[in-house]
Amino acid sequence: MPNKTHIAYLDSIRGLAALTVINEHFVIAYGLPCKSQSCQQLLDYSPLHIGWDGGAAVSMFFVLSGFVLSLKYFCTIHPAYTQTFSLLPFITGRIYRIWLPYCVILLISALLYQHTLETPLLKTLLTPSDWIVNMWRNNPLTLMDKVRESFLLKLPPAIILLPQAWTLTIELVLSLLLPVGLLLAERGTFWLIFFSLFSVCCLDVSPFLLHFLSGLMIARHYRIIVDYLTRRLWMRRSILLMGLFFYTSASTFPPSFGDSVISLVQGLGASLIILYALSSSRTQGILSNSILRQIGKVSYSAYLIHMAILICLTPYLLKGLEAYSLNTTWLWFSSWLLTLVIVQFLSLVFYYGLEIPSIRLGRKLNSVSYH
Image (cartoon, rainbow, N blue to C red):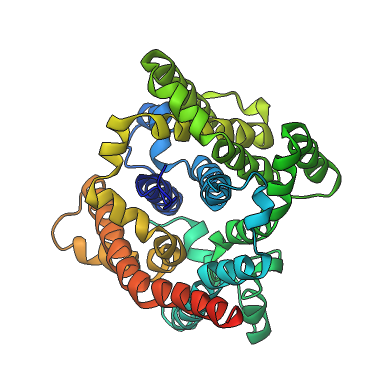
């Protein structure tokens, strides 16, 4: 394996997961483009739901995060992974990778929030849901409320400006647990499983820890898994089918299973899909498409800004589109597509104007502290 452990085609999976979250929020805001109950049920309760299943996408985020963050420590020539781990540079890197861009976009969202409160609600033919209308308008915030939303490690119970940020809190906490995971993985799989279950059941750690550590275990056995599956086409295809089945369980499993069980099953599905991608050269070729990789690169910025665009800009897109047609299905698809295009364009701006400088600043600080 090359020394460089960044696997570019996995960025595409992260990007597609981010698009899924954006799609879910658009569907919650404006419903599905259906005029009949049968159409609604077909789209909602079938594997087609994968296109806007935000819960499954979040599971994918955490499995990918565990894999990507830990892979380089398992690719070292040293037998002890923890010998290559430096805690302070890692924490600094995560803060500048996640927290600093978040704070900047939080500030922008706060300014847009204030503007929204002072602007009358725009009436559109495609009626928005109470969820998206009241997200900002019915939740007055003081200056201190806004400041509290900047503390990612302990966000307030009601997150208003960037409601999707709840996943970032978990991401930051779990990534800070990485050295513990590496240490336990060095001791053996049993200790890693025991720590995971104990933390979730007794210490009130997020169940997404299991997704994160699933990614870590895939990274630990990366070489063996790829070598084994690459030569077994039938097994790869079986893994993909099982992965998709579990990943879409929110729409195919009975509601009686409960959200927690569904989330764990989706995490298993995400893990199997990643295993398939790691061992399928054809899939890697598809995921290496330049457009998909670009979507993956800017996925964090897209994740951060899309709610503000849905609240502030999408209604104006709908109003403008009404000049061309009053067909609600056409309005739905047109506004959805334009929203995605604008999210991607602005994400590109924020990626190069905010994310990259923030990452470089973190690296520079780490470099200064070691010299």
